Length: 260
Image (tube, rainbow, N blue to C red; front, side, top):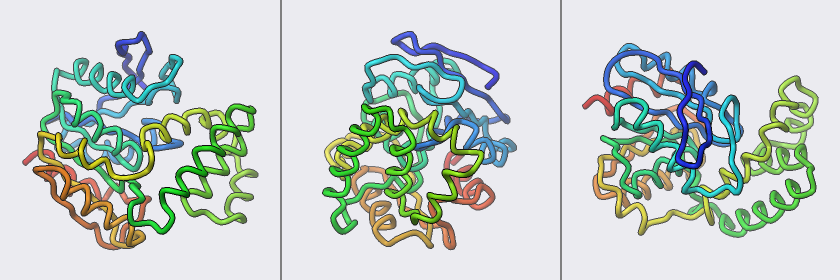
């Protein structure tokens, strides 16, 4: 990351700016850094100024205890100030939930988009699954079992045991274990895992909710629910895409919406 700014509580935030045009800050999800969204930033660079950053507790950014979701909203406020005072926001997965929190809190955002925020209202046993995950994740991290915490998250995303076993043996595993404490942050951002309708009703700016056409039906329904809950919301489905959306597919849709 090329640049640094400081959040309200003194936490250092690392970020990178790519391209020219209206500014959009890209917010990553769980087990990811700003670098995860760098390919999307490059795809957007001919039409917008794309800002990627390492959320607190990841990559080149700092961390300050105790964690609160409000501190991550303050991080976005610091980034907005650093890049000109206002911008559009885009968040993927749990990063999308953080974007929605920032919008409901009234940050100076022009418009926003989110991709597949995993609210589990329509997932069978979703609330119970979230409660069990939260308890097991908290225990694993408290006991220093970072590998087990990562496994819990990978199972939550639907990966099978053989895929998880291969992941443990891959060169990426040490980095995943290093990032494991931040899983608690994303879990806090997602709260009880259900759509916060009252909060979304307070979002004052246009919002585009996106989902992949090849994703599970409950994810598509979450997209529609978000759009319905936000006064100026819209849901759009990207055919053939999954939770791992292709930048070449997402980029043009996002650029069109954020520069409208």
